[in-house]
Amino acid sequence: MIVVEDLTRQYGGRRAVDGVSLRIERGSFVGVIGRSGAGKSTLLRLINRLVDPSSGRILYDGRDVTTLTGRSLREWRTRCAMIFQQFNLVGRLDVMTNVLMGRLSHVPTHRSLLRLWSEEDRAMALAALESFDMGEFAGQRADGLSGGQQQRVAIARALVQEPEILLADEPVASLDPRNTRLVMDALADVNRRYGITVLCNLHSLDLARAYCDRLVGLAAGRVVFEGGPFDLTEDVARRLYGLEAGEVLDDSAKREAEQRAALPGRSGSVPVRPVREAAIGA
Image (cartoon, rainbow, N blue to C red; front, side, top):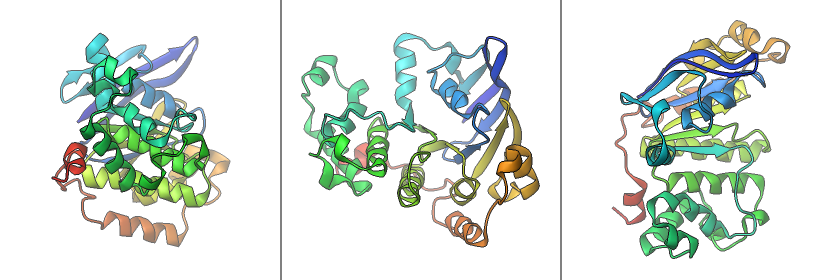
């Protein structure tokens, strides 16, 4: 379980995150919603320790993450993988090599620099790509892929880190509707199949209601809503988004959310099957 206690990040006289306290259950799919500038990205970067808090702390299974340094901090970032809106792939490298970058913390430095990947590492990378229908692109340059394809490669790269937590910072903000659905389906599959906790920043209320088990609403760096997808009423949405909440959800989106909630494993009861086991055919 992740426990966030009175977490604050201040930049000059402005608080990007202001006294946030949360409890995030293992294996859940949590959507973080709110307007641009509400503090969503800063919150995820604080959890991953890409940004240090001004005050407060983050606990994971009772361990204080905010005190980690050196090797312990690197290990935490391996366990708590990040996916970014900009994909962060190396365009001139092929897809397989980009995914293998997720194994850097698991292999000696000299091997990674010389690209001396083991057969097990390659098998894990290919298994991750194939699970997102990207195996046929393994030898293609990353910059030749569409935005949705690149984001699925980024998810595969995060998956081979063998993380326990996946932080997705607005992963579909720059994608068209079809690729948005493909990427969100991929994140939901990671959550269901491997039991990985997912925290996902989203602008779309429809997506948040359709895919997430629980929602956290931020405004001006503070938590102003916390509850289930169907607790997010139109009145709450208007308070979160103001004039941007002209429509909250249509009936089709509600039906999709209900169908996803009924899928096996949405309660977090599916046993975790590590990527390593999936790669070697366990």
